[in-house]
Image (cartoon, rainbow, N blue to C red; front, side, top):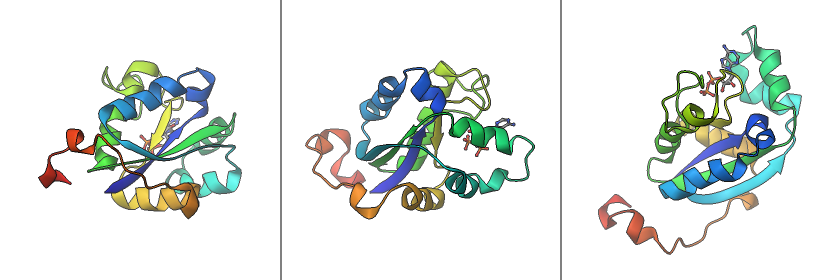
Length: 153
Ligand code: ADP
């Protein structure tokens, strides 16, 4: 099944939203297969946000991501990347639809609570960037047959 990466940003940690945000992914039916707290450094952020390196706000985004430790999560499910992105919502909290994480908890373009992989290819790279192989777990989810039909999995 597909795996995808989520980062609970300093805006999530500082605003005491970790439980609330994790709960949304759990309740949807995704399987949590990796979770840890890390302090991000400049090297990993240069790699992670390489697509933003020429933007005027690049340094500000990096500072924001280093403001305190973050939580990195790996979720698994059918079409997990697309499912997670739709729960997260549009980048800018002011435009994000109510009911999404950013729509409900953010009023900012930068301080938007979570990062979520934007494609299956990015997810594969990002999981390797933030997790060692032994930090990703495989275990039986006993409710699996109540989450999907047999033909879906
Ligand atoms: P997303 O996180 O939705 O995939 P991007 O990859 O475009 O969005 O941007 C990465 C992160 O950089 C955003 O989540 C946001 O925190 C920050 N960001 C993007 N655009 C801006 C901007 N114009 N001003 C400030 N921060 C921005």
